[in-house]
Image (spheres, rainbow, N blue to C red):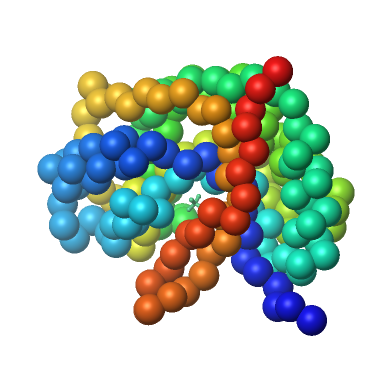
Length: 176
Ligand code: 3AM
């Protein structure tokens, strides 16, 4: 029997955007503010699934493939910190309807399939720093990254070579 995998659905950020964000982060957050998330790992989580068996993964992928909705534009123009979870993040001042709809759909499918259920409402964000246990100065407004979201991705989270890696295992196009 194959081992369970730690999985989550997310939106992938374009590589150029990830690189720009990393540069901006280095210029705008003090080095001791927290542990920076690697550029390759910057993403926006839609639904965390926890440890999932191969059989359940197959069922979730089938359900994900049934989602029919148009793409949307994501504009990352907000930043903040959650002290309780010790993260600093990027987000949207106004979340697109399509983003909320997609996350809601995936979370409901996961919950119906008996996966781990995310507590509370969906707070769309891209984690920038972890272990940010002390209040950090949030960069002033004026930054913005905008990009079209035309697909969503199923990622596996795993440790390899002493590092946390997020590997895409499947992706689905958003279309009407
Ligand atoms: O990108 P963020 O940080 O929002 O925090 C984890 C990361 O989301 C989250 O899943 C994403 C990929 O690991 N995550 C990890 N464990 C979690 C849990 N038990 C979790 N989200 C909710 N509950």
